Length: 196
Image (cartoon, rainbow, N blue to C red; front, side, top):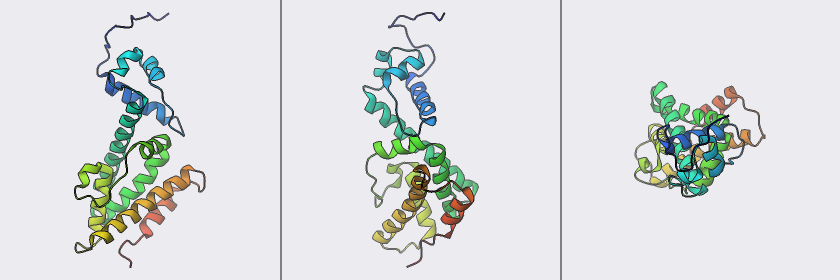
C-alpha cells in the first residue's frame, strides 16, 4: 500500500508545472478529442489539486498552456523538417507535410490548439509573435514567392498553404480520407503557389 502524503506535503519531483504539462501531453496522446481535468491530473501526478491550482488557476489555464505547448512542439517539428530538407522551397514542402503528419499523430492536441489559441493575423509584420509554426509558414512563403509581391497577395498565399495542409489533416482526422503519407506528399508537392 502506498503511503498517503499530507495535503500540504511539498512536491519533490521537480518542476510541477512542467510535470503537469508533460502528463497532460501524454494524456492527450491517447485521445481523439481533448478531455482533461485538473483534479484528475493532480491525482495522477500524486499531488493535491491545491498544489496544481498554484500553477493553473482553472482548467482553462491548463488547456491554454497545453495548446501553446502543442503549437510550440508543432513548430519545432516543422523547423527540424525544413532544416533537414535544406530550407527554401524543399524545406517549405516539408513544413506542410510535417503539419499533416503531426496532426495525425496528435489529433486531440491539434483540436485543442485550434480551440484555444486565438485568431491568427497572417499579415502581421512580426511572424515570431505568432510562434514557430506560423514563422515557418511565413518563412516558406517568402522562399516560394517573389519579394515584390503585394501584401494582400502574400497573405492570400499564406492562407492557401495553411488551408491546404490543415484541410488535409482535418479530412484525415474526421475520417473523410485515409491517411496515406505518399498521397499527402504528392498533394503538398503539386501545389504551385505562384500560379495566378
